[in-house]
Image 1 (cartoon, helix red, strand yellow):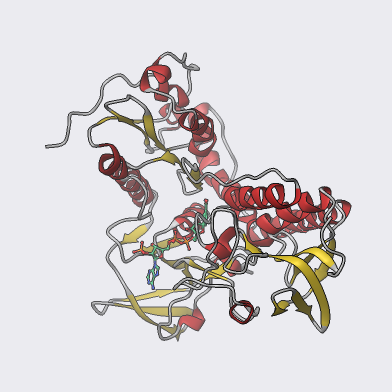
Image 2: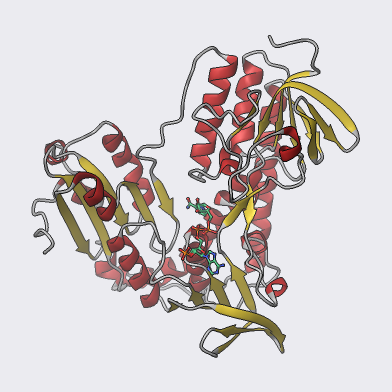
Length: 455
Ligand code: NDP
């Protein structure tokens, strides 16, 4: 396989989700592969993203679970929470996963090299003085938090630090209204912090279905989050006990911790991409075609560094498609239609397909089904939390083109319905499916009355 004039058939830069998947499959198909990682094997998802975040989401949710237990007859003593123990246990789990990922790569036959890589020319990578030549290079360097250049931004933390704070914040500001902002707002609020969420848009989660956005914002406010929409931070200053945020309009907000969750940017600086002739877009992301090829034919890129759909399972799929195409003579392209996603807010969101606005623009007439209800669990717990479920059906062909939920287990539920959308299921096929009773999920197969058409 490959050409012997190079040290390796493939050098992968970045051992995150995309890089690891591509490299181990390529090695399994016989390629000589080196993977270079400057930080920790596992990348954003495993080390400083999805996995540690989800562990904190689980940890935080116990606060509500203890409170809810009393309606079911339980008397729970004074519950005590130890942030340090949660962080230590989470860190131990991340260490374990990091070593599992390293082992997977090595057992697949990849050489794992610790250090920062830089392209010296289109076939040569330098790592801390060592020179490696490769027939092909895969850029899988991911992304990092974007911190806007406002005065005092150095006093703010990003999601990287929020996952390992030495002390649980008691009064916190979170800036941004996207996935990361709402997830951390849910975690820290449930753990007892006073949380102010400051966002420049009209409500949280731009890009999601409007009913979903409104429902989540309402639940967040009900849980005591101070939601400040259409609000901008002008500057941050140190003050006694923390930092003071100066908002447009003159308001000051004093908190002990300020977290910025204002998007992420691709890691494309200082690795010699421009010099090697790899084209970047205006945001600095690597431009690729549908086969993960950059402007240099033997240099490829997958995952967040290409800034398409920045989700772990998408990077995994892109990595797999690359390895299958190049090293297994099995041409595969990632299909970006109906990619489901979840937001692990409190309550969480699961979503697949089009929003109502997107569906109207694409299909014209729709049948829209919406259900709002109190989850059965909260009848006895008396918790004031409501769920939302929404199906969007294109009227002419009756295909379900959008499926959205806000409520407990929404990500688990919507994963299954994503298969139905991928198969092009119709509303009649949903209706012909027998519900599982009593569940929230059955609502998706028992929605009978479409909303009246909008004026
Ligand atoms: P998002 O792009 O989701 O949200 C960024 C937020 O920051 C938006 O509300 C945006 O406002 C706001 N913003 C951007 N720039 C500024 C600024 N200069 N000043 C004030 N506000 C600003 O980014 P996240 O950081 O939340 O997450 C990054 C990506 O990571 C996500 O897009 C997603 O792909 C992935 N992710 C996925 C998760 C999951 O699947 N559960 C969890 C976490 C991350 P506006 O809307 O007005 O532009």
